[in-house]
Length: 116
Length: 112
Image (cartoon, rainbow over all chains, first blue to last red; front, side, top):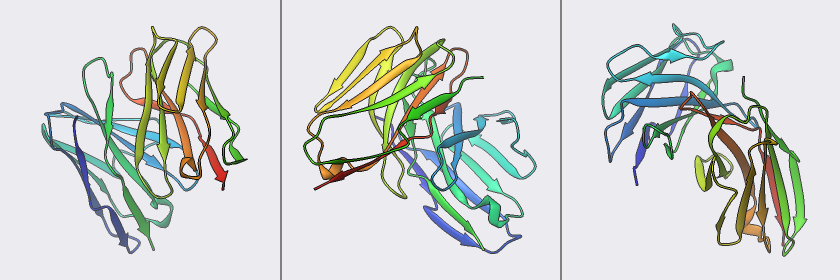
């Protein structure tokens, strides 16, 4: 099956800095990738859908200017948390749907962001 | 808007017990339902995927059932082991969407 990598796995940064998280598909080309975040002891919430070659689609309540998504190629999507603040500290996970019918989704290992 | 609920939120059982985790969803128009395991601070491990046309799936000591019309799924774990301790997440893909909607999870502790 597909293998999805995320980099970095863990990042600690100061408040006000920007952090870029990469999600990479190692096995197949993905026109769509999903970004989720998980606050401590909470479930995963969809943030946005990353679309190759076009703008990302953001869920209600997610600031598109704060969470910049770039799906530059069929194997790479990046999420940039701009001007990060402590409340952005979370676990960020990307996923790739396997087929157009989404029979399976492959998840990355996640990135733990801590903003001091 | 699809909402997924899981009960109980937490469960502690002695080793060897059989147990059932419950998941309910508000909109029965789904493509599939999936159960995941998440260890503390880690990513997701897919356990079972049930298509909307299926009633259940089995893998080893795990059995998941789906009653789409009533919006319910259960995950049955037989002969629980301490290694089963983790958070179990239920998620659905709704018709017309491709992303998953997750429940809040059940935190399972199996005591040796």
